[in-house]
Image 1 (cartoon, one colour):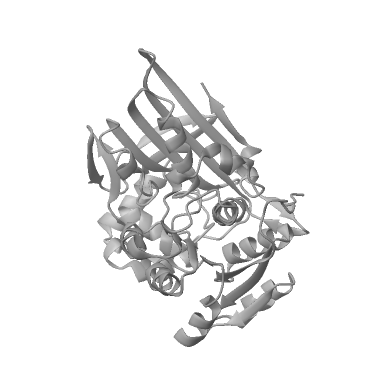
Image 2 (image 1 turned 30 degrees about the vertical axis):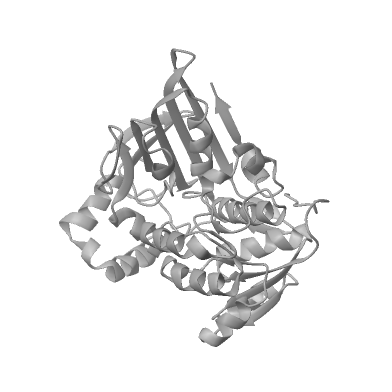
Length: 373
């Protein structure tokens, strides 16, 4: 069982709001409630979901319109947004206006760019993309990049996978279906031959083995966060791919391209949610590798992790719940402790990997992660 102890240098009882009481919102509330350092309000449109969260002993509020949403934001230290990606910009706008710190989990590139523009004159922190990918993988990638005198390539791979895959897709739904489709359909940022560009989703298929297990990986959107901006002019190749079990990519191309379901995303969402079961028996696979020059020698460094779910205060959290919630809770903690900037846009690269892994929430990654030279 995992515990998240109170830290002596954390400000007492910061008032925060979590928007969204789904699986990830529940996990965020649980982790923060266990720390004892935050006065938590969880807001959602669904009374049944709020009832589950209220059983943790945290406050809840039904948000049925813009006025009730605004009331859940005003006067808080921070808002953690666990709503669907299309709600990111509206909520960030309200937080910027209210001077409230804002954190989210969005993988949507356009939303992040809009939030960055909002942050230009913000009195508070606006920090999107605080989950696993984007989020933790960008922190790992930036840490690897900084180890080189000259960086040649940086390749980041992440998968949220079923531990016991079934069917031709060998996949189960473990998080937002809307977010998953977004990643499979939208252009993917990359650095190719030293130039920032975009590459098509589902392309760049590769296969590899990690700890004796065969995987495939291919381009998906949003996983790099702002890392291509940070490394522009400093690397030849930078890319991000999602990890799946072999055969997944071919079926996706059939659905999205041959059957043209990329143009009918609502139908695709219905098909996936009807045909593919959810699971909390999942595993997070993280693999990042970088190569370049150190002291005139060509070398390679890699980071890998396998993370499974755990029990927190009698509640079972899946691997994707644990890692996603741990990422955003760590970002909040570091801002609250004054270890990150206190206003404006904050990218994941501002977080040092050592600080993240040493954090009480980020330690969920530290138990399984490994830097390999």
